[in-house]
Structures are given as structure tokens and as C-alpha cells.
Length: 492
Image (cartoon, rainbow, N blue to C red; front, side):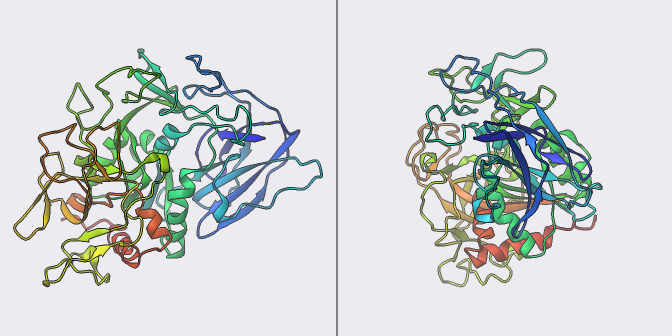
């Protein structure tokens, strides 16, 4: 048994990478990989003596559960990052000593998911020196969902997991930290979300000649100048948890002419407050603790007005929101779902160039982008909609979506249930929350320009369908998007 976590998920060549590892083996070696069009094995580090360490107990006394709120504080092993490592997404695998002196074969791209390994980004010494595209890995969201389960789920006592969703810890708030559920960034979790959303898309980017540089949520939170070196920011997959500083920096970037592509959904749904020297965060959410909700309304929801929420609707940045979107059952994650694709609108727009897709203006039925693939879901975002006499959807702006947001594709959701906490197949997410928004709910793809251009895919699974090249239209739209937005438009 071996597991571990990193002191930081973001390093530079020549910097230090800190490993915190627990194992019942006498020793282990860290084995390194770079993730691109293939998983490139970079070799192993020196052997490190092994020791087994316990996690902190759950502060509420939940039997068998570890604390999701505290730094697990396992002893540190510090390694120097080689100077020759190029910027990118990396994995470290913790490989236990074997009695016969052998080692398991290296991981391959299809097998990166699992325990006993972690990911980290290597940033360039000079931001923007290799690419003007910055790929933001949604690390706050990763930690919110991280249960830190014990490796070997079939073993007695293996299910010790706790997270923001499972047996969370609620803090009443102090002068140093606000009220809310607390999650530590220093716990083991393995590689799950990276394997599903990011790995296919990172491979696709490299195969098709799109160099990118990488950062984490914490990098964007801490550095107000980070985005000044880039022309395009990518948000990929499931990007639910954002700090106020992240919002500030992203919005200033757009005002200054920078572009953002949200190839993601459920984006910017909860606000987080990094604490404990940015090794943890607090978020006042509507997740129950035991049988009770500690505090309602949950004041770290972005869209509700103050004091019930943050008072900054997420769609004022993204153009769309989960509150006018929906999801499929998380019990079957990522959920089996219909595969209708997006109904095409405005087929003369540059985003559709070369796809051959029609919008019905020629008298025939409109085409559907991604039909036959799981493009829509497993969570999707939308905007308040109205339809004109030709059946073309437009954003009303009643929910805070910016003027000029152009709806390019949509899929209508069926209202199977109005209770936010009882999602059903294709659930829409609005009537119980905002009865004044009476338009249909739909997964929505679109964009607007306000300084820079902001595109939204409106679905978590865009990078999966594109990365696996399951639909030529999705691939071509992504290429059109990157080719257009990887350079800022000249200032007027």
C-alpha cells in the first residue's frame, strides 16, 4: 500500500517538488512522466526509505473517516526539478519496493487513473515564452471532490473518504477565515479528473500543434500579473470552484483584450476563500453535515445578490450558468445520457467555418453538432433564453449574461424535477431558484466580445469528445476557436 500528496501542484524547472508519502513497504521510488500526445516516461528518482503514516481523524468523530479539512502533515521528501524539463503537465507515481527487487511496468496513457500517483504542472521560467495560450487546471474543484480514499477499495477499512460532499467539516469562522466548509489541499487523492477530462484534450492539443503553458487555480489566485503574458486562457472540463481573486484577474484580462475559452461547465458555481497560507480553502455551500445544513442560504454561491450570495453572477463572465443548465445522475458518473448534440445556430459565423453544418436558414432542418456523442453533459450550463419568430434562440440578459452574447448552439433540457437536491435525468436547474426566469432551460454554446472574446462550450464533456476525436465538427470548431483566439485582436 502506498499513497501520497504534493506540497505544491505548481513548480518551475530547477525548483523544488515536495513529496509526502505513506507506505507499508520499506522504501519507494518516485517515477515521473510528462503528459502529452503520449505519456512519456522520464525515469525514476532515488530510492526513499518508506514509513506508514496515519491521517488525522475526522474532527466530528465520524467513525472510520479521515479529516478533509486539515493538512495531513506527513513528512516531506524534497526533490529538485530538472532544469531540462519543458513546461507541461506531469505525473509522479509512487512505486513501492518489491521483495523480488522488480518494479511494475511504467504507466501508459490509458492507465493513468488510480491511487499512488499525483499530477503537477511545470511552469516556464518566463511566462508566455513558449505559448500565448494558458491552460488552467481546475485544482480547487479537484480538491473539493477529493475523498482521499485509501488505496485498495476492497480492503476492510478502505472507505475512509471524506470531502466537501462526503462528511464535510464546517467551520463557524474566525478573524483569519470566513464561515464555511473547509477543505485541505494537502491530502492524497490519486488521479481521477485529470484522466477523464484533461488527458484526452492535452494529448489532442499536442498532436495538432497547439503548444500551451499550464497553471493551477492557486497560481491564478495568487498572481494578478499572470494573465498579462497570455492571449488566451483555457478552462477545461469541470471548473466549479473559483476564488474572488481568480474572478478579478480573469475579468480584468478580458477587459484588457484577453480571450477566454470555457471548454467546461458548472463553471464558477461556488466561491472559495483560500486560507491556512493557501494550503486549504473555505466555502459556505449548501452541502449538509450529518443530517443538517449548517447555514442557509449558502453565502458563497456566486449569483444570488448579497447578503444571500456573492452578488456576482458567474454568467457575467462566462455568459452561461449552471442555474439555467442541468446535469445527469452523478450516481452513474459521468452518467449515461441522450446523445442529441447541439442544434446549430448562425451557421455563417466564423466558429462554424469548414464544418459544413447548417442552421436551417436554407429551408432544411438545422444540423446538430456532436450528434451521437456524449457531448452534452454530464453537467451543462445555459442562459435565460427567448425565441424569435424564426425559432432562433437569443439570450435575454435577465440573468446577467452580457449584452451581445450570441447563442451558437443549444440543446433543450426537460424539466423532470424542480428540487435542486433531487436531480433527475436531464434536469433543468431554474424554477425552484429563480421563478422570474421563465424561458426554457438549455445547454448553451456561445460567445460575446467585451474587450476580449469569451467563448463557452456550455458542457463539461467538450474536451473529452474533442480529445478523442469522436466528432469532426467538434474538432473543427475547436480548431477555429484556438486559431482565432490564440492571438488578441489588435486594439482599436
